[in-house]
Image (cartoon, rainbow, N blue to C red; front, side, top):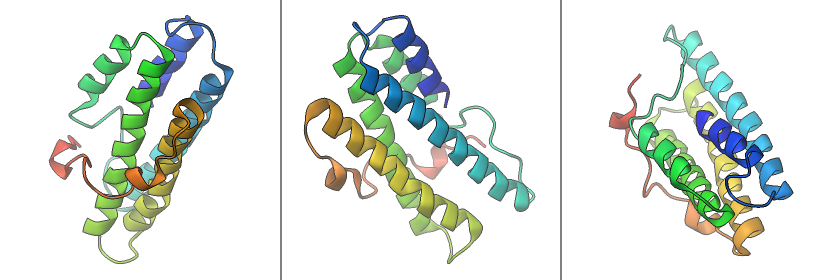
Length: 150
């Protein structure tokens, strides 16, 4: 979520050049989806007696934020966001494969993964004119479980 908040602030400040309304609308929608995903994930964890997710618990978060900070154009930030969404989709797909049966956490991961894949595909289509749905599927590039710091 903080990644999209940083992109939103940079868009508002004009960091990536002239305003691109479609990108601003995408960022707003993605932030809402990611907020819903975090709430869903936290509800499952809470129900299992585990602490809620707080902040950005992935070890690669600092690198992501550096990439966002380094982007200076619409094309640059779209590439960063597309990578983020592709990795998120693959991570949830990988999680489903490791989780047992129809547990609440497996169901949550299975419902979040396609939304992340759609984010990646929407970015690819809207800003590059290419469809990336097939390239988003799979687990290559998924964040390993060991990257979770929670």
